[in-house]
Image 1 (cartoon, rainbow, N blue to C red):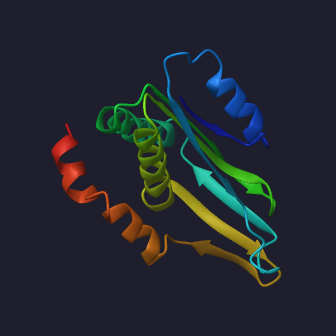
Image 2 (image 1 turned 30 degrees about the horizontal axis):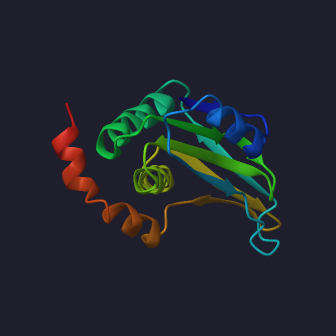
Length: 156
């Protein structure tokens, strides 16, 4: 499931609900991303997305991750709008029969979300607003999955 929300969320409650009734799943891995204050330089993080399009693009990658890692299920919840430092921004959960698949799929999905997902990110602070682009480290994280080759091979 892929969801965008303007509302704050509770990662613990999401995890509890995601795990409910999973008697054949051996592992659930999660990641929660939290907005940083950047030592006072950021008073708010603002994320924009195109409703419908953003979820569809993320959904395509989530489907690929399910196939690549043999997942039973996944959940991606991502905030949009203005987010205060300390608030959760993103929650990713993956369920698989074995831990390695769950860990790797969660890591893969976060590398995609951080580097290629169709979000526009702006930080607001005392000195005004500034657009944020993925860092070289974010692109390097995605490249370790051989993303370009894999994207070409799995595109329709």
